[in-house]
Length: 313
Image (cartoon, rainbow, N blue to C red):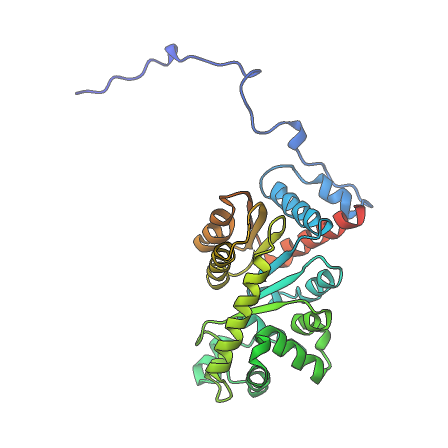
């Protein structure tokens, strides 16, 4: 059947004055004026989309810490490689972060920064001759620390070893800072995914036991997450999967884990973080936020907003 053109003269029009709108003058940003404070800058941002989510994330952390609720930061190694360790250590010292969760690569880059003051090798160049991932000091230090005290978990075992060694650049280390402050750092490895797993010093039994102890410790923290905040920064697969299991285990053990805030921050948004961190965990109550952008810009912004919020409170 031949289609007939629609007669748009018959279209029913509505009144702009009564139509619902999602943006009004109160949402608009303000031009920057030289000499303003950081608080002025935050207030100048539009009250829409990511700027609004960044505010909500900061407010959730401030609210949680004022109420004595936990703030857990789970992170991939890129956060360390883009220079954010000093900011996170400051947040730990201020009591803004109550626990960290790492993948295995975080331990490597954190330890190398402490031992040598530098990290992140040229993978393409080193892969060509088979030297990628073979730095002796990295493997020996981490693997020996874990083998010596697997009952402590990887995070505390390596952190304490760094405190005992006291290398010149220990101030760069999140693990050392956490051990000094007696804050938990749980490390969740995938065997074969990290360079130290191919070193002769690697003890798979000790590493497995230590990482499982860390998993149990994370469950204990997640069990108290009601009213708190869980941030996933730069981990697309491992830590979102670990968090989902930790949350299920905590609830299975009888803990009322709901009404908390989850935040995913990454350069692009992936399925697992958005499903396993932002959406599913808060279906029983809470708020999930996704913030897209470079860690070296967004995380300092968020931390500064949290500091401002705490100081104002």
